Image (cartoon, rainbow, N blue to C red; front, side, top):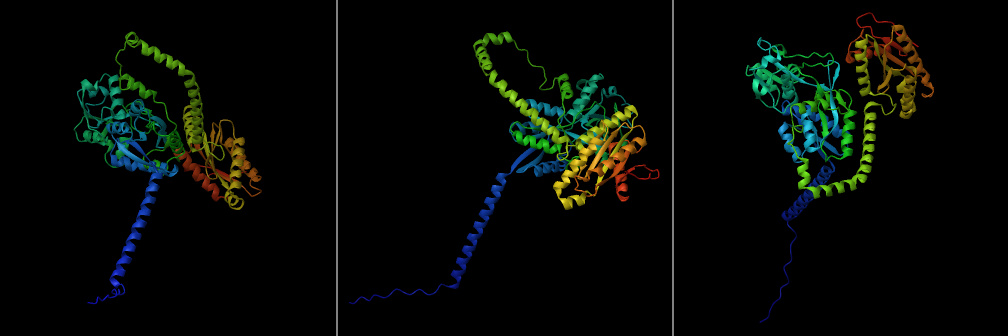
Length: 548
C-alpha cells in the first residue's frame, strides 16, 4: 500500500484581530515603562531632599499653630537648598516622646521647656523670637492673671485664696509657673490655698472658663487676651487684670515680670552646617515679612540668655534643678577605689589632647558666631548697619531721648538718577556707586549718628541730640552735597538725593510712625524734582523744601 506524503498546510495571512492585540500589548508595555521611569525620577528627587521636622509648642489650637508657623518653615525651605522644613505642633508631653525617638530636628518652645530639653536631650538654642506691637519691638513675655470685671471680691493677688483658678498645665511656663511664683511671693500657695483646674491647651480654654463662670480667675501668657480680642472671640472690657504691671516699652497686658521670648533650638544630631544656615537665614529674614506676619512676630535675634528662667526653676526645684540625693564621697572611694584611680589616670592622660581640641573648637565657634553676628547686623554690599541693627539703635536712641528730653531725627534718603546708572553702566557700576555714597555719608555725619542701608538705593540717617532745626537743616544740606559729589563713581552721570525727615517727639513718638512720616516727606521731595529735603510737619502747613 502506498503511503502518500502531503505537504504541510499553508498558513494564511494573520487576521486583523490578532494584529490589534499585538499593538495593544506593545502600548501597555510602553506605558508601564514610562510610569516606572517617572517613579524612579520622583524617588530620586525625594531622596535628594532632606526633610527637617520642627516641633512647636501649640499653646493655642494645633490647626492655628500649623497655619501660623508653616510659612516660616516654607521660608527656610526656599532659602536652604535641598531641604524641606515641616511644622509639627505638639503639647509638652508629645515633645518628650518625639525627642526620645529622634523624630525632631528643631524645637520652638517656651524657655522653661527649652531648659528641660537642653538638659535631657542636648538641644542648643540658635535664635530668639522678636515680636512687634504698637510700634515697639518685644523679645520678652510674661504671664497674665485675670478675672471678670464684675467680681468685686477679687482685686489683689491675696484675694485668690480659696478661689478656683483655671490654668493650662503645671509644666506651662507663662500660663502657670510665673503666676505660681508671683503668688507665692505674696503669701498665696496654690497647692494649699486655692483649687487649680488644669484644662490643657489651647489657652483659650482658660479664658472661656472664666467668662462662663466655671473658674474665678485664669492664667494665660501675655498677648493671648489681645489676640482673642482681635479675632472677635472675647470682649476685653469684661475682664480685669489682677496685679497689672504697666510698662511703657511692653505693649501687652501683664501681671508678672518679663522673661526672654521663645528660642528656636537644634537637636544634637543636626549637622552644624545646617544649624548655622538655619540661624543665619532667620537672622536675615526681613522684618515683618509675610512669614513673620503669619505667626505674629517681627523678626529673629541672636539667642538671649535664660538665667532669669533658670532662677525660677531653681527656686521651685524644677528639673534639672531639683534637689539631688545626698552622696557620700568617702563611701564611693572606699567601694570603688581601684576603678576611681584608673579613671583618674585615664582622664589625666587624655587632658592634653582634649585641651588642644577644645581650644580649637572654641576658636572655630567664636569665629562662626562673630560671622553670624556680622551677617545679621550689617549690609553685605556696603558694610553699613542693616535694618536689624538700625531697629536696635533707634529703640535705644528713643529710650535715651525720653529720659533726657532730647530730639531725634530719622531721615529717609532715596537716590535720584540711580536707575539710569544701573541701566546704562551695569549693576557692577551701580554697586560701586552705592559703596561710594555709603562711605561719603559716613564721613559727613557726626560721631554718634548712624547711617544704614534700608534696601536698594535707599539709606536711613539716625541723628541724635541736635539742638535746633537750623542745625538739622545744615546737616541735610551737607548730605545733599555729599551725594552730588559722588559723580566720579557714577562716571559723570548726574546723581542727587531726595530726603524725608521725621523728628521725635514733635512728629511721632514711636519707630513705626517716624518711618511713616519720613517716607511721606521723602515722596514729597521726589515730587518736587529731587535734590532737596522736606521735614515732616504733621497737620501744620507744609514747610518749604530745602536743597543743596
